[in-house]
Image 1: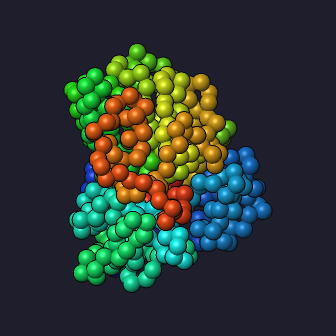
Image 2 (image 1 turned 45 degrees about the horizontal axis):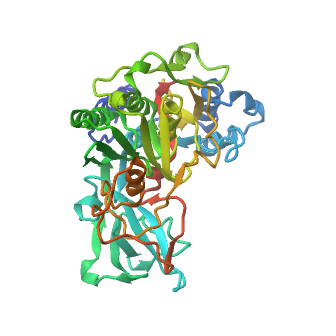
Image 3 (image 1 turned 60 degrees about the horizontal axis):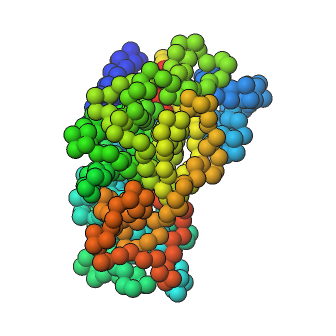
Length: 470
């Protein structure tokens, strides 16, 4: 038998190990939190939730008074009853039953197949839908199985993809993907022998999907596709810019069309690598908190530009950002940070529209297992601007959509978004573009605005700072 004292020591050790690896390592962390809060009543947990939210929640002054809330509710339900106009004003706060799992998710550790897909249909065939793979996560089961951007999935575990099951059909742990091909304006299945049988596993997201340098005489263009802002990979991000700097690039294209956010600190780092170094010491952004937040937390309210050895800003007059409806939060923060200091050219679709961020709130006394992820701050740029927090997000100067098939790989000058950027840069693409051009044909169309993953946790829209123990 494990006595209470031993349980407490075991729990403390597990949480310390988890937080250490989450902050300092790319290793996958597994921890058993089954001993946490085993005897806590709903009222006890909910009282802690209310107190914590009243201190840190951005809209704390609009929460209902505690005495009118139902403290007997299950904590997973109670949390949402204290939010301010949930799904209307507050569209983003959430709770996880296990703070260990929550921290893992925020650090890019998830069980997954490892793909994001766009859904298309044959307009001539009722409900004949397919998934076209938008991106494949590095070293994921999908990557190991040889899947790549542009591959077509016709069926999953023998079932057709329909307008009612598309959001859940990839949820199973083991998947048999029926592959297909594009034949003119129709999608056709490949032989059964070419099906992909894949089992999901826990994977650490590696956010840099692709990087390349395109050399067109006087134009040296650095391109990279970035999937999530994960601080464990900040050094890899610096290394990309080191290579850009050595190559002497003078144009930069950042592909954030599948990036739903991540750590504010990593977003700030990318901003520091891009902005002209003459701006070091000036205001990058400012956070706005509620009136009741602890004073020591407010020390992080103003962020100044910092020098970075791999900064390339003295070579840049502008930056191109490739966007979609999945470009959100910490990705949008990059755009807002840079707008007062340089020309930011957006190519693609309207961004998601999220100008607020969160912290993970954990019970400091380790009595309860829950991890709260409430909105704790709004963020503005140096000009006091933060007007992109609507469903319209940022509107691109050049509208381009992922509706042109076949998809080309990231960094290929034939790829629809990058090709548009190269055209604006002024590159003469004559005889440089493949004869196998992608064309949007009348026989098929894209059905959903948002690109989706095989694990919905990967599609969460957020930006966050470090956890707080309360």
